[in-house]
Image 1 (spheres, helix red, strand yellow):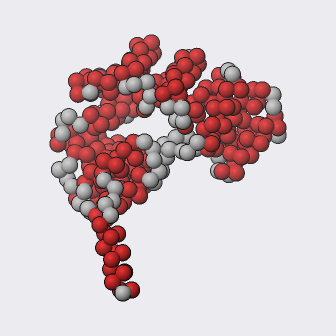
Image 2: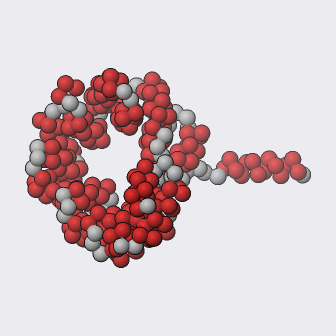
Image 3: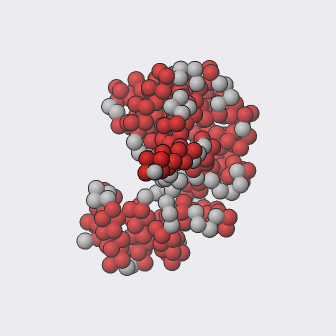
Length: 317
C-alpha cells in the first residue's frame, strides 16, 4: 500500500501542468521575481524550447548575472544559429557586459554586437527589438566603430513603419542625439500617451523630463500613472526622486518613498538602498540632519559598499 501510494503521488505530480511560456513571459514583463523559476521549469520539460531559453538569458541579465547570461547566449547561438531572437539576445548580452571590459576588448565586443544585430535582421527584418538595439548602437558607438546619427535615423524610420508607438520613441532618441530637445520631448510625450500613460516608454519620458529639470511635468506624469496603478512601486519611487532632486513638496516625497519601501518590488525597480538615499536627501532639504543620518545608515545596512551613501554620510558627520 505504501509503495502504491508513492507511485500515485508521483503520477499526480507528473500530471500537474507547469507554467506556460506565455505565463513566464507575462511574469517577466510584470517584473515578477518568480519569472526565473518559471522559465527553468519550462526548460526542464522542454530543453529545446528556444523562446524559453532566450527569456532565460533576459532574466539572467535583469537579475544582474550578466557574465552568466553572455555565456548562455553564446551557447544558444551555436545551438540555434537560424533563430533571429537568439542573435538579438547575444547582442544585448554583449552590451550588458561591455562596461566591465578593457578598452581594446570593448572595441572587439562592439564589432560583435553590431554583427549579431545585423545577423538577427538578416534572419528577420521585422524584428523591432533588433532595430531598436541597432539604433542605440549607432547612437552610442564612436564613428570609428560605425557610430552614425544618420544610420540611427534610418533604423528609426523602419521601426516607425513596423510599430508606430515604438517608432516615436526611436525618433525621440535620434532627435536628442541631434540636440533638438524640444522636438525630442514632444516625441517622447506622444510615445508615452500612445502607450497608455504607463509603462517603459513613459518611464523613459519621465526621466527625460527630470533630466531637463521639468519637475512639474514629471510630477504630473507619475501622479497620473498612480491614478491608474495605485500600487506601482516604480511610480512611487519616481515621485520621491523628483522631490529629492527638485526640493519640492518634501512631505509628498517622504510619503512616496515610504510607500515604495513598503510595496513588493519588481526585479527591475530601483533597489531599497536607493530609496533610503533619496529619503536622506529630502530630510536634508528639510533640515532634519538626524533623520538624514538614519536613512543613510539604513542604506548602508543593505549595501555597505554603496559609495554614494557613504560619501553623503561622511559629509553629514
